[in-house]
Length: 555
Image 1 (cartoon, rainbow, N blue to C red):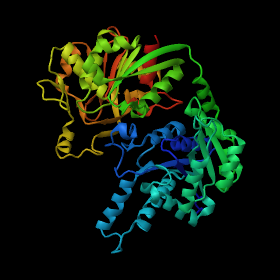
Image 2: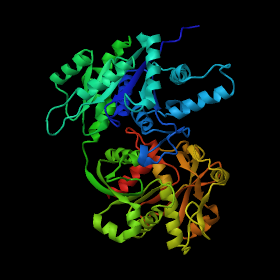
Image 3: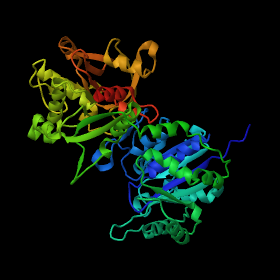
Image 4: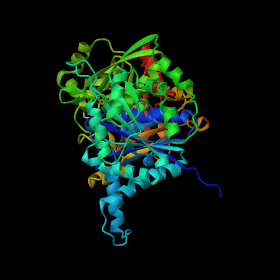
């Protein structure tokens, strides 16, 4: 039997502040190494005790990323998909809650043979096992392990301990990269390295000496600052890599490559240095800098506000999908964020008159009653004024309610999620009733990729055909990712279609409505999808629905 290759491991940790860009850095390194011909598999470890990101308010931790297998992961999982152009899943995302539950369940089954089960070694062993399982499953040359949070937090100490223990066993196969923030206080005017020095000191206290420090800063770090970090962090100056702010995060791989990081990593891991083929990525990044048209799109949601600030991360996948399609179409797109509750209080006409010309409207994912009436008003406004409209999941459902009230005359039409009504045009998926009754919310929705048959002669069919988006063209099948427990009520299907709202795609297994639309004779672009095309968009392959929506807006 041939000897199995020795997998290499790269741990990526963060320092000083959260949100510094560990995920983007890890993904950029993955892109460089995979473009050089190595099989790279990423895995993200999160600190929280939630079993996944599905029950977390998006304002708290950003938009949960929905995977093809139904995993509700961290936003960084989406970043890995976009940079590596590969589907991620349950093996690529782990929470501390998931680790604890696994160990406790094993103890209850007496799988530890009566041992007193303690955090070390049982928690750390489980962490190590997850890492090694990814390597085996993917037959990976290199596994990139992103450690959630920042060095010094009590919640993630076991991740660092697992890293230390793995390094002790096979030092030739493991390196540690620390991504840290170097601030430039405005009253001083120079970068300060002390926070990063202290962050590395914290790593040292955990028994870890980083092989590389990647500094996040406003500008490229100068030689003096690199020398200071090298001296006080006990490393060579060439191993201090600068990662300054750039116009687009997709430029980061080039910043790291220009400093030879990929070559240095391969050398430290004892792997052959190969030049990455970044031709397609270069063309893509270049396309982000040129445009011929403009579009202004209003996004009406309810997860923008956090205190006195507005949060982009609540709809991260949506904004990425808009960007990917806009760049592909050569359109400079401006997004205007509108709070659905403001529309409820002030009225749709007043709010839209204040923001000026709008070329398109998106109503995205949402849950519960708050802001729903504002979104329903928005769907009506777009339909009546013939403004291109895209409804995503909740936005599709509320567009149906809008149509039922305005066109079918069902004035009390609503969703069972929000109210008791004589006309529940949106109702529970039957299998979900008992789950909700028993408060079984986490991981119980209709999740992951589902096939649907698209009706010929519709806008939806035209879109998938135009951009080669069919999963199986011979069967008119497409597949989108889902995250919901309510659906279009088929009892009303004939009423809707008689009045002009077409059902253009249905799920092949359960006959659930997947896509609704208005004829292009009546509206330039009015489409709602129960699935989430935003989670399948990639920089090099934007999603067909977003491409055509941007196309309609730019006209």
